[in-house]
Image 1 (tube, rainbow, N blue to C red):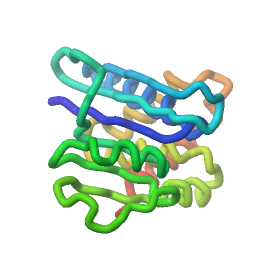
Image 2 (tube, rainbow, N blue to C red):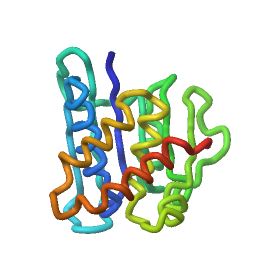
Image 3 (tube, one colour):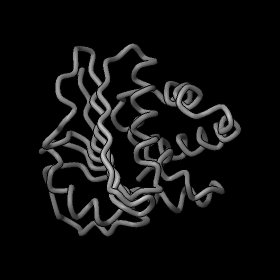
Length: 179
């Protein structure tokens, strides 16, 4: 078993936190993980991306030229990375911020989810990353939703544990979105 995902957006969307939580969830399940974060120099609004590789066997390089799955949270990331998704792959797109032209690629599955809208409906626009994580986990089976919840407890600092129930709701909303 091997899952690789490329998550991209802009700083402040929680891209790196999402990758970190995903990696921790996989570790909780006893899997091997590689987490490779990358971001621009800007504090907020610059490019943010990460690669997570989850496998039963050892993980070699965390660098992926053509990811099997991409989670794309903004238009600039879509324009830059959509073409790199491997044939037969999956692209989960934040439809609140990304315009996906119809028929752009027929060789991959594109799932468009209004992540910002869902996060706002849940009461916190910062939950976009958790909506994305839930969608990814539900569509790929890379990790369980329970492991994501457990990973929140291990990844978030103690002072932020009061936000875990809201994060769990956002993960469930992403997982349950029909797209």
